[in-house]
Image 1 (cartoon, rainbow, N blue to C red):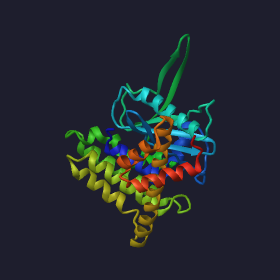
Image 2: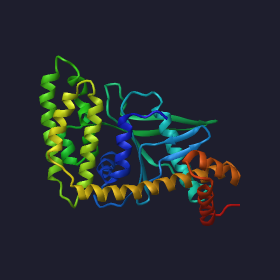
Image 3: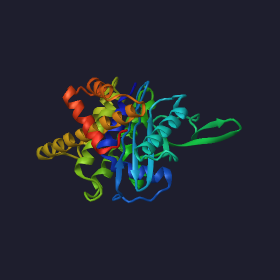
Length: 313
């Protein structure tokens, strides 16, 4: 599946710093979750016969699930892909709960990093069966609708790494570059001050470091042909958050644990799907060896562990 640097950054933040998405969920769906709300990052890889489908982010708060995709370029398929992703999410959860009578779909939206006057306010697609039909609507949020002030006021921290998309055209034009550069750096100062003012009870230093690193990665790629822009912006952002060596070591230890957990979830998800496809035990073990690089003994152990905690007929 083809991805961009922006997709990778968005997904990484969803995995590592999911709490920064709470304010975006509140903004888009009209909820009022506090920063202390328990947010769970759900499994975002789905196995089909054609290959693996990876969504950008799926969160669960209480009983509600939220699916958010990040879109950096125009794509005529996004409407139908959102339907596909939402149904995969709903079907996978129904299977996991052994509920074969009801499929609950998540609330979903697309965050557009680039937009124009032709970008719709929402995405819709009509689903039909004989004489019945329904319009499936996905919410749209445009980065261009938000200023550094509104991002600070609403604490939409997830938008900070991508904010300079709002200046992309002007910064890449020789005629407007200098003026746009001054305005963009002034906005970067405001965003850096926003991060610097946050109480540690709201967001940890690790979360702020992750946002700063994401900002650097996005802009290094966005302005790869004019690195001076990214360098100046990074100087401003880099002066407001830092991390000590001891925190790096603690973070590395935590990330190793998280990665192990994600790998285990992917393996269990693959076994679940292959069982739905009526694959034999030997076929499943062989597939685990090829897909996840396990030895046959490890694959057999994973299958046996799955079988011990799930009813396999």
